[in-house]
Image 1 (tube, rainbow over the protein chains, first blue to last red):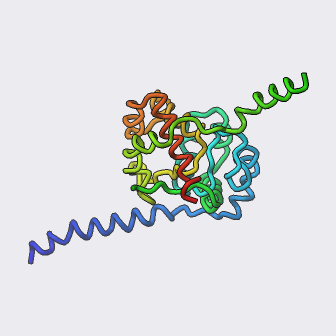
Image 2 (image 1 turned 135 degrees about the vertical axis):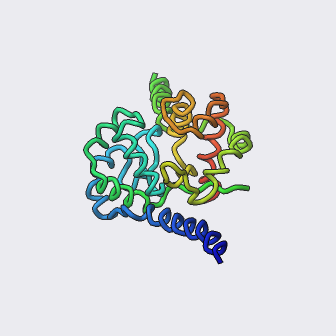
Length: 117
Length: 107
């Protein structure tokens, strides 16, 4: 009996961690409508949907994963990812702003998954 | 003189067309490793946790600058720095040409 309890503990812990991992991706879910409102500055380089870059050296944002976009913006904001232009814009964004912007761009038609052949 | 002016204009606009450089067929072969993470939909990076970015149809010039930034260590990511450290400029051109061509073929 004791063994069963001990044996089930790791499984329970793993299940908890899985739940936490699943939850964390939605914890700071953004509002895509607010994201569109807040994206005026972004649009001048990335386009309204994030699929019309002003220059080919600017990334397409449309269809990118929301949590990756959030990670990228937060990295620009804390300086761990260096880009003079993006650092300036990201510095003024709150976590909620970032979540909203990510929600907007991730919902647009654009980037695709690569498949493994 | 008029034609010359036209040729000059065409040449000046050439960089704006974003002409794909590199060999996508060779790129596909050497990009096999990339698909181990980028080819699995919703594959997660950990510490911190986020979904590995979609690359299909991304702008080639952006991808080139990203890979070169990882290679030089200017952009930090343990796996990406390790992967890009072995890539030549030609490899990067070919791989990114494949990622760009991918969405054109598939969609």
